[in-house]
Length: 315
Image 1 (cartoon, rainbow, N blue to C red):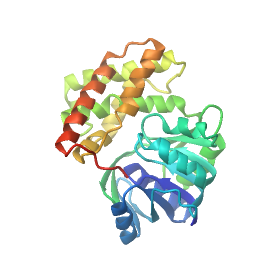
Image 2 (image 1 turned 90 degrees about the vertical axis):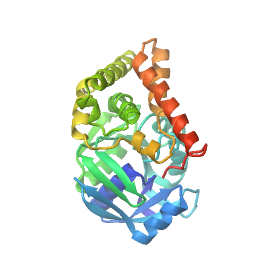
Image 3 (image 1 turned 135 degrees about the horizontal axis):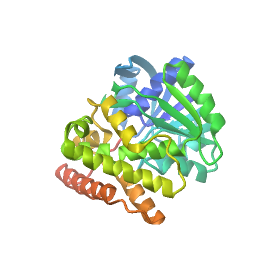
């Protein structure tokens, strides 16, 4: 089974990227998922559909996550949950002939690709997109895709795939070093996502409730200070970026809240937890980020226990 693109993880981001890749290449995408139920649903629908501010259908050939030796592609895009990314990257490296791109939230996936010696790049997704079901996602906030190399490598991979995504209708920016953009996205994910999830509301709640904005902006500012201490210069003020994204995705339900409502594990360990540990290494105080981390970990535990003690697998 050969293809131009393999997309590991067909959640909301995976579906959106599949649409852009199909439209830019005029070829079906090989979709690698974890659940047989989703594979069957995609096979019956013959692909996935994106609705809302971006519309379209992408033909997808679904397979269940495996090391199937028949699967080959030029580029593999990993769009799984952050906690699944290291394993997915290991499989992606084996099937991709020209490069691997990691598009998930949090940290760990891109680092894993470099441990394998892969030619790899990062994708920072600024679109606000919500998963509706196993074959549909809805775009509720327009943004862009920032693609870039990492630690001096992968820029050519970012350029090659970025051109196809742009041809497919995506708003794309190519950067030499994606790390500042990853940390800028982390400043938003570590503040907006947990707070909206704790309040059980759409992203706009942080702009509508004064106390919520105070907490969120403090957290974003702390992440900016940690990045600076690590020698990373963010491309935008993190508080201004938080305000911009929260406004653009007012009606969007954060991935964190979607996970909790679906009895799934969240990515808080790979986002807030990672940042708290990085703060410790950099000797920087991050009390707001750490408090949100502890509160969300507590909520996650309570929710998963109420769901029967185990989370549903992701896509």
